[in-house]
Length: 244
Image (cartoon, rainbow, N blue to C red):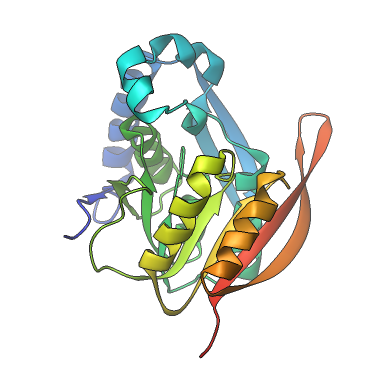
């Protein structure tokens, strides 16, 4: 079963039409959330991203019945340092240009938008449909074409494969580790690679054990990024299947 995609309407539209749509979308989001907009420069490109000002304020909006079923927290609402690091690496290396890329747990879409800016063909996914509304806004704001789709990484179905799978700061709960490895295995095309950015959480070691057990080799790139007055250490793990 193919992904149910929504294509962000950028191509074939005038700047006036895009700005009108952005105004409408932002008004809708502002009616539901306190918003925060931040600017970043990756390589030679400038970006702006809209997110939620205080993700903790969303905790009161969680439906208890839904939480019992999925235990989903509003992590999507923040831009995490690992996403900044991954986005910078994607733009500065340009290694995803021209490739079919899927992002897992994209949040507001920073890394997907960075990849699309370099010329990747991007499918940006998250479990939260609320997150995907922010992705659509941010993609239009940065004038990059991409598709979005809701995806539960615990239940990846379908035959579509991608040259690269990317994710930032998704190794935060032990229960997610094996589903993420399984999703990567299901989504990667032959010869593809996954890029997982993580702020050196303890669970990363367990993730790497599962990765090796499932036939992948790993290369590590250690980097740093700033969050406020703090410097955050981030590692980008590049996963590729072992050659037979």
